[in-house]
Length: 333
Image 1 (spheres, rainbow, N blue to C red):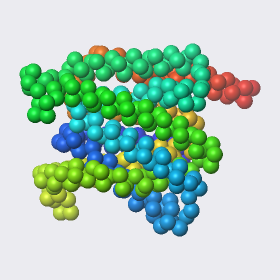
Image 2: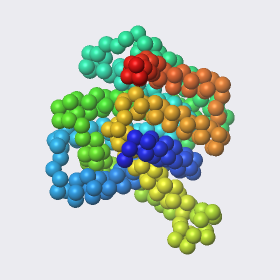
Image 3: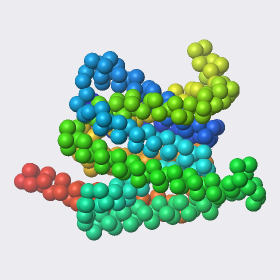
Image 4: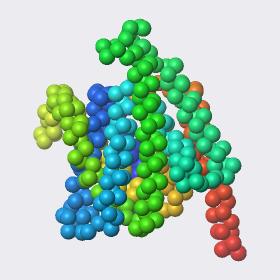
């Protein structure tokens, strides 16, 4: 697969995945576990067939190292999906996760002792400010439908939302720590992205036994959902509950998304990959706001602009463009 095809599939897969994810959480906000489980099962089966050649191909990176990644990767994914059950909207979820550069910089300073240029710290400040603006703007728009009364569990709507923010923050920093650990592994054993993709998902599967109650509960709810009337003329899909169709769509598009990102990292420079993923996030955000009519105020726009501008500044986009044009000019001469 070439770079152009990989870029196209990143946009197609990741943006489509957001649509199916939003359709699922709109109907069942607490179904994060079943969504994550379906994604992991599909990627593990695909990897077992094509990456490990039905278990005949030996892994390069030791299993014990993969297990450390598995524990962190599993917790990050489950935590991010669980946040939807705590009054976290899709736009806030996407913007908050875009602040990963902040967490990565902090963890690199603490764990690896790295130091950065002024532009890097400035970009982190922009991203932090943008995330904070969007976070507090969402808090302002949060309506307590109980009119001051606490919910059945004894937690107010605001406190529920605050717990969701806490989950996202925890997942953000754990994901950064996982990235640093993975970077160390690749420096020792070389880059094996397809192998890592397979083993991380496959070895994570037993962890879903801990959430089996939630998975079974939502499987029953999915089965009791009404069929999609738009598909009633298709004999194969007629009568299938809509939430199962949405879940299959989410599972397939997630595979296209994540596998295309891994392909893109081997085809393009890190700058191109960062730009593609940043633009993909922004496009998904805009689509989510317009199509699903999510609340998005002027403060959200300001925050989003700061986050994405800060991301581009972090990658030294302007400097890299100037350098690229300078090289092309020299070649022409």
